[in-house]
Image (cartoon, rainbow, N blue to C red; front, top):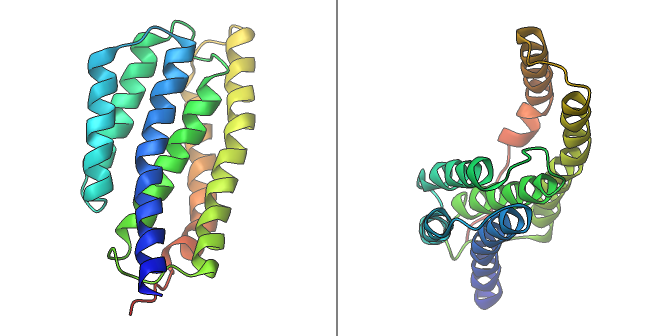
Length: 173
């Protein structure tokens, strides 16, 4: 049993690196390779895999964002959906790895719960991109009310999901 538990934690940590590599790969497909930033993304992701409870994950997200903005000419390129889904996988993997020590029990229930969250976020990436792409295609200029409306929608969603997301119990041996 202990081997299965350790294996599941190692797989989650491997997903951290895999997600970061996917972000780099999607950015490469959509634009020019930026080796320095890509190395930073992978190095920081490696640090996250070893120490998922650190704040280095924020640097990974920042580096992925910088890589996209600098390397890709069209910011609303459809490959951004892949980057968004990969970032969701990265974030979920880091969060899942950070909630319990390496030897903690990872139950199927927890797998379904975290997998469901990841699926919901990944699923919402497509309509979000479609809205942003439609706005860009229509030539609508950025407007503070549009930004505020988006923040209100995100806040209401977070408030709705918040209590369910924060009340997770983890079983340890």
